Image (tube, rainbow, N blue to C red; front, side, top):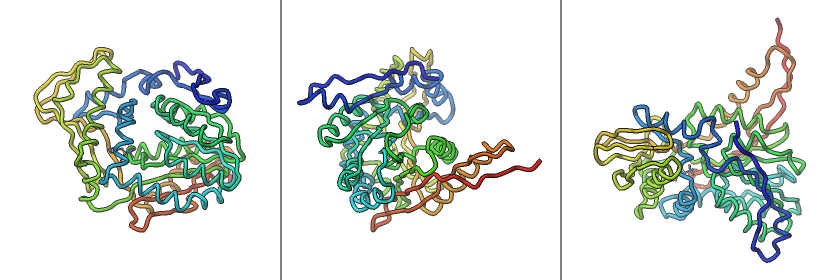
Length: 372
Ligand code: AVJ
């Protein structure tokens, strides 16, 4: 459960602080991403105790990591961000037309750059705008919220600092007639198929019938292009990967010697996923004092820090439909119940089919009476 939840009003040194303040609310779930879990760092202990070793990708994103990710998005080799941006540029108005006045809830909002395209569309159509960014990195969330409030005089923001699970479960009722949960940038790719299914069920739970889900997903393409995007020539991705060890040192009083690890990433063709690893350069021992954990590494042993799955739109749409059906059955319990499902309404891609947007609507499913 959550350890501490509090809502604070930001004190701002902006031109008209009172105005900005009155349009901004931040709800914070404890102070770091790990402490919303039932036991802080349990996932680190579990991941480093098994073979092969893994670490959750969420630990990339301290403030430094979020900044490095912003730099990745600008790299010539990293096509996803600019491709998704181009798709949004072309179709945001169409999305706004479909949803009407809609509160935007964004999972993993980061710098909120792409969100501006959606906000612009709603504003251009004279629709009210409410934005609920959710991010584990409080620094970047607050900073971008303040920039947005300055640039959009009619915008209201309620931000949530914490994990998706915690924030989704705690969302206030929508301030506008409908709500759209946006999960852009192909962050969905960080989840394995099983986690993905569970996550879709959680999203269905968080949405009311009629509300929307907008998914941005990276699509399958040549190995060469994929591997270049995760092994950039300037080494920014390497720095991003290695920064996770700095972050863990800070969170858990660790003594990872970051320069004794190497960045590695490759495309796993069978699983349609990029894998990022940190490779131990020597035999070494690492201690994380706050977790009471000592980990031994053999030379060349790796920690898998991320999977980034690449999707096929048809398969994904099928998954979306079937997942919601499974969820409905599980909550049936033999009674008449209002079931919800995620129905894909529209998909958009770029001319090269590198990246896709899927707009789904949460719909009430025909009620089912189970016979004895
Ligand atoms: C933010 C998870 C979508 O998988 O492409 C970028 C993170 N990792 N370069 C991705 C990332 C390495 C990114 N996601």
